[in-house]
Picture 1 (tube, rainbow, N blue to C red):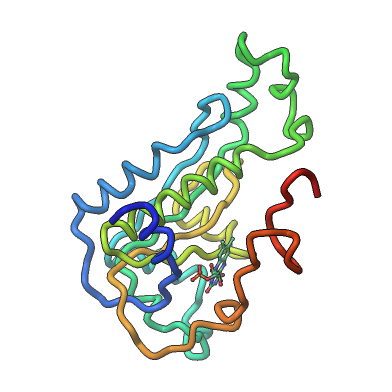
Picture 2: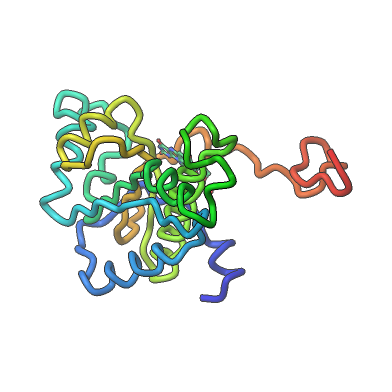
Length: 205
Ligand SMILES: Cc1cc2nc3c(=O)[nH]c(=O)nc-3n(C[C@H](O)[C@H](O)[C@H](O)COP(=O)(O)O)c2cc1C
């Protein structure tokens, strides 16, 4: 698939078949996702990957049995792969304390950062993961951990201090006729800001 096709075909999948993803294909997708740019080349993000029956370690904590009945996207629970992405702020403080970066002052504290680059880099990796998976014919859904993040971190043995970026469900897309949800019907904002509500402000806002 060329890049333009990939960009146009990209959309979230909320309904998966129960077919597994070949471990070598999954490794290939994960390998592409780690090749993103990162501030100071800090690479301060980690993926915790659950496959097959292991995915219940995620769902048991994030969607307890009593909430499943009313959960709208039931076949999301069929996704054969769940990847949680965690950012590591300390990796950035350490990197920016090194000789070539110490003058920035960013090694001192998280508060010194006007933009939290660990989240930027973690989000870049999440996007690369999604594009790599879609390029391989797989479907993905990026979604949040919300207030369940601490419990998910405990269940998956995530070290203290890691910040949740989000979860990417990966699997083979299957049409279930389930509704996509209200957000999907929102129109894409136009390119030029001269149009009402456009995104790109050429020459200044
Ligand atoms: C940061 C972020 C959080 C999201 N959280 C959820 C979520 O919790 N549940 C969900 O169904 N979709 C979630 N989505 C998917 C969005 O609803 C979706 O990307 C948006 O409606 C546009 O649809 P498309 O990606 O299919 O083009 C999230 C997307 C992003 C980028």
